[in-house]
Length: 200
Image 1 (cartoon, rainbow, N blue to C red):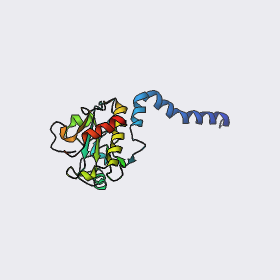
Image 2 (cartoon, rainbow, N blue to C red):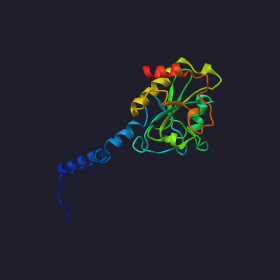
Image 3 (tube, rainbow, N blue to C red):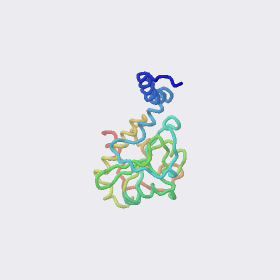
Image 4 (cartoon, rainbow, N blue to C red):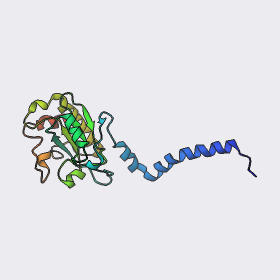
C-alpha cells in the first residue's frame, strides 16, 4: 500500500537539496576554491581559450606562487597568435595577448593555470605571461594603446599576487634563464612601461 504524500515535506526536501551543493562547495573548498574561480579570467579581457594541451591545469597560487610577469612580443599578428594558442600541435600559450592597434586584451589561459610561454618550467609555474602583438624590430607596433592597456593589466596582476611592481619582477622573455628568445627586444621602452605600471 502506498503511503500518502505530503506536498509540503516534498517541497522542503527539494529546497534543501537545491541548496546543498553550494553549501558543500563553500564549506569544503573554502578560500582556495574562491580564489581559483576568481582567477579564471579578468572581466576586461575577452576569453579566447588556448587548446587544453597547450598549458598545465593548476591551482595557483596555492600550488605554485606567482612571482613574475613575463613580457613577450608575438612576432605574429594578434589573430595569428590566438590561432597558434588554439592549435594543440603547437604546445605553447600565454595567459594574455594585447593587440597593438587599440590595446584590446584576450585571455587565453586562466591565471590559476600554468601557461607554456617562458621556455623554462620553473618560470612558467611562477609567472603570468603577457604577449604583445608585433615584432621586436618594428617599434610602430608598440603603440600608446598597447603600452597603456598592458601596464594596467600588469599592475592588476601584480596586485592580485602581491608581486612588486618593479623591473626585478616584471621581466622580458629574454631574461628568463635559458631563454633562446630576444623579446621584447631593445626597442621596448622599459622605463616608460614600468612608470605606467607603477602609476596604474
